[in-house]
Length: 285
Image 1 (cartoon, rainbow, N blue to C red):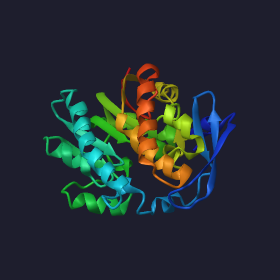
Image 2 (spheres, rainbow, N blue to C red):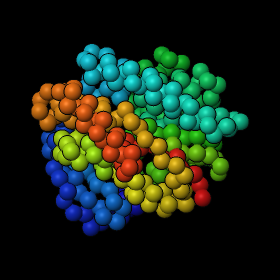
Image 3 (cartoon, helix red, strand yellow):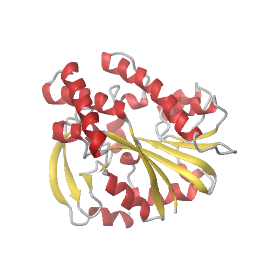
Image 4 (tube, rainbow, N blue to C red):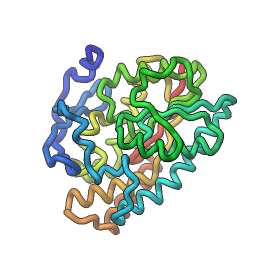
């Protein structure tokens, strides 16, 4: 925790956000100008309880509402896009670690493509679902060997990590010297974030402890001698996030308006590169 103090220095108030998923409680977002990122305050001491909701569909296979069904359909397509990305590196051993592996869909997709897969997932319920798909993630990354993986992926996971700077060091240690770290996180500088402000669903307080920009990712990883080699968009995220944000803002999903805002966000990002979510391909320098 000593290292984390650097991220809490000189913070200035940015906005107040509400937890629409579980508690309906309000939290503050504070800006760290040095790292160009925001932090959530306070962090609940029982943070694990804030993941206990059927609405938190990143840990379920729910297909109840229209939003859930769209999410699941898009997820199937994005799984193939993610597989295509990791296959582009042409590793011989094909040893993959997926951190925050959820219900195991990405691990299963990679395993079916002859990757040697490992997963880390703190949720016991999600691990149980994964095991039914013949992949067996463990609960703690510290149990894994160092210098061991060709590719480590974190799909919308880094924003959840409590001891951020220490965890980044751990990720680097688990990666082979010539390995690739792939991190996907929301981008609070996107158009949809600026449009929805405190209603932006990707703030997702208090589960999202950190809110990153492109600058913050570059600075955080340069601290451990790693460099962002490439940044890629996650274009579907703007539509999904806008649908949830519209619901939080107006009480209705308002699909047409949400689709328009998502489309506009992607359109503007063609010139700004500030997509709703971004994938960072990171390597040792």
